[in-house]
Image (cartoon, rainbow, N blue to C red; front, top):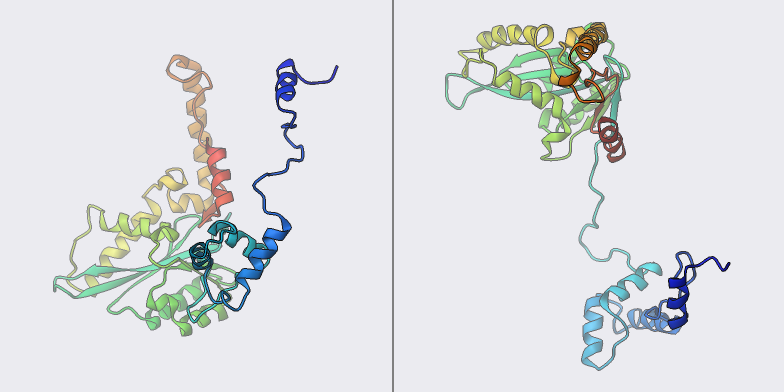
Amino acid sequence: MVGISVKTYRRWKENPQDRRKGTRKKNPRALTEEERAEILRVCCSERYEDCAPREIVARLQEEGVYLASVRTFYRVLKQEGKLPHRGNTRPPRKPYTPPELKADGPDQVYSWDITWLPTEVRGLFLYAYVVIDVWSREVVGWSIQEEESEACAMELFERLKRERNLKGVWIHADNGHPMRGSTFSVWLQNLGMFLSHSRPTVKNDNPYIESLFKTLKYHASYPGRFTGKEHAREWMGGFLDWYNTVHRHSGIGFVTPQQRKRGEDKRLFEKRNETLKAAWERLKHRFPKSGPKLWEYKRVVYLNPSKETRNYMWRKAS
């Protein structure tokens, strides 16, 4: 009739305090208004106005006075807005987080970087400038140069501008000198592009181009050292043609960038799923009860996804 169990009644009979969730409880350890006011008065007094709460508590204890713990001092001061940054040091700043870039089609988000190509002369390197489309993983532009500079980067994007519409495209890069150059950055913005940069020393912020460079340098035909610029250009041209038209990427369902760009990956996934379903009908004992795991077409690709997006993708995959 009362709506509680016998056990609850007996517990309340021994201790009449109502411990149901949501009821108002008074914390016996909470500070009174007089104690809070005393903490504020002491901290703002002329004697302690330039001292840290830890020092104030220590000096008060030397005098035989205890008001509260150090953590309580900080909590009270924060609630009253008494903890601004003071001093000549730079105030702490929130770490920079690159924006979440979302692509659901080609020519929406590009990523670019520069990698070193060693020559037969030790200590002398060539530089490969590469731009890829994040959505399709297609290499849309590249060049081999003898130096790492803004001028070489502008030359590459000037050629790319004549081949593609760059207006409204996001371009992501790391924090190298050519990428961060003010002249080059303003020039890209004048083309209508939006700029995004990785966090310092964080390679995971630019994963697609780093994956390409690993594939490049671990390829069986990679010569290790190049005799000169022409040798590097000849090999790079052949490799990138293979990369765009033959190499199947695990990140886009083991199809080539050209197949994904032309929309052929949908048809390939459907054919694979038909094969799996037919095998499921013939060989059910070889599959789990839920059936085979079908190929799923991933329309959207994220670069530097937010925590919420990563959690959503993880839940969807599981």
